Amino acid sequence: MTATGVASRAAGTGAPATDELVFTAWSSVSPYGMEAAAYAEGIGSASGALADLDPEAFPGPYRQGAVVPEFTAAGALGKKGTRTMDRVTALAVSTFGHLLDECGPALVERPESVALVLGTGSGSVQSIMDFTRDSLTGDRPYLVDPARFPNTVMNRAAGQSAIWHGIKGPNTTVAGGWLTGLLVLGYAGRLHRGGHCERVLCGVAEEYSEQRAWLEWHAAEEGTRPPLGEGGAAWLLESAEAARDAGRTPLARLLGTRFRAYHRPDEAADALTTCVRALLDEAGADPDDVRLVVPLGTAGEEDAVRRALPAGREPEWIRCRPLLGDTSAAATGFQTAAVLARAAGGGLPAGQLALVTGIDRDGTVGCALLSG
Image 1 (cartoon, helix red, strand yellow):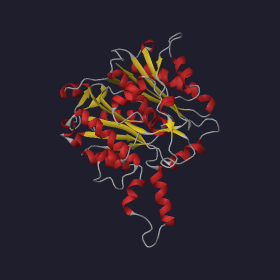
Image 2 (cartoon, rainbow, N blue to C red):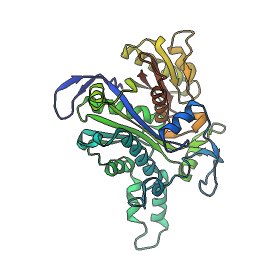
Image 3 (cartoon, rainbow, N blue to C red):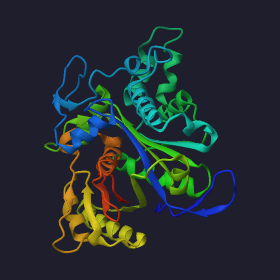
């Protein structure tokens, strides 16, 4: 699967056009704080966001984690409309809100031309399990609070984000484990190339909750349980032409995404090496120009990337997981945000390349290639 972003069609015109997809804005709600600048500073200084967890506020098997400080739906978005909003939905709505604030109101003057693609795990695992438990233990005749039912569906956060911010274009939820952020990029590229929208708001969101903590605890092998993190990251993808018309300066170009499957765990690294080589070749990119790599942090991943690059070439590495913990479905989204933070600070000059990579435990590998 690829998303090169070179052949796109102007939405609503039916006329084909050739243009590249560029990132022109980004936002983050992270354990570093509610602003993109806080994330950029934290990642840039390699400052760890992990801290001891309050067992009353965040019960579960983990004693450390990286959570968005003092975050609540009402606190971030106000009391109106947030009484039944769960944490992952609030994180998504807040993250897209910061992105739209940066872009300005003109972005949604034609709301039907703007798409929204959100990556998540299972939506809110906490909401799903709480609602199921209430259906078994609640008092008759009502058993459950029907106002909380929407929180149990996976596309709740994406749908609520669009409603909250008045976006009426295509609305999609993508779930793909640790590679979700990369899959969001790939899907957004296809959506734009198909002429379904003029611009795409892309994002990822993951919550810290007791139920998610227990699921992750039991899914991981003994001795391989990194602390969990949470938060959201979002960015605006549009054609270079649309960016010029809107007066926005591109931060980076999306050259493509690629994915590959592996059958046995010992095949994962080779699959990623093949994946990276194929993406560089398809994009017509010189591997010598790869200056920045942001890996997921799985075993063998960095060596797999090195094998795809020229011998002796050692790029700069940004390692997010040791700083943020395991952010699950938001992981590769936060990695992408790390590249955009670097680009916004002038650290990804024209012609230089950045790789975002990941090996998922369920049998897939993926990568995205960005350029300055």
